[in-house]
Length: 309
Image (cartoon, rainbow, N blue to C red):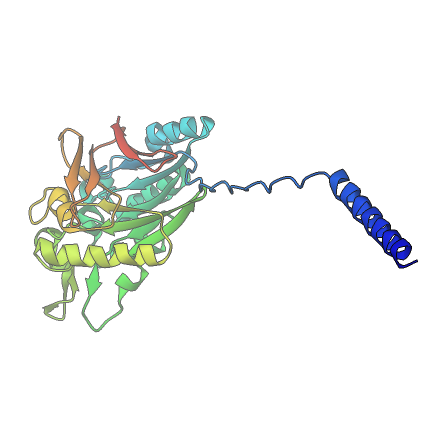
């Protein structure tokens, strides 16, 4: 009896083992887990193509919108090719000799605005009409008047507070910072206008290029702090009597390009200099006069090159 019971229990256990073995063998083996590799996201830093047209030393030759036809037509041609554009002037756009009167000079500013100019530099020619002339130019419906180094130290009305030292403007998706520089040699050529109550009340940040460079650097830094992607120094240094554009570019850092205009029949110049951080920075100098202009081209990748007409 005991043997019979023992055999039954053994048989029952063998049956359970068989069932379990069959169930396990019927299950498919689990597939190994696949390793998921996340693709690295590369930010697209490209932007629209931009061209900034620049003129200088017109010396009152251009008085009406029609006189700016060459540069405005070029701007329109570029826009039709889906290239964003802006137009600036390096200074000396008016003068007592060329404009003839302050009223004509003010008309020139309004014509520049109509032709598409956004910013102009106050330089020697603009001071031909004295401090009161500058005051009226600032109030005229023209482009933004700029100078980062025009300072007042007197006790009367400070007109320099209405002069823009730097400006950050959006062109498409790019924030362009403009820093304008007045030729400090103006203190020699127009000194009579800067006297108030027997003392010099207006200055242009010293007679040394190093002091001027420090002043420009401050405005460049301000552009960067306001989010400028590209900073361009627009200069009215005509003769380089005290400082020239190349010397300044070598002392300054964090500007992406320098543009300038020489007076007379000087040939345009396109060069590269090492800046204060030993980095290459492009410098473009346009020939002065009516009908001529430079083109500062910014590629979608941010490369800057020049062309001249």
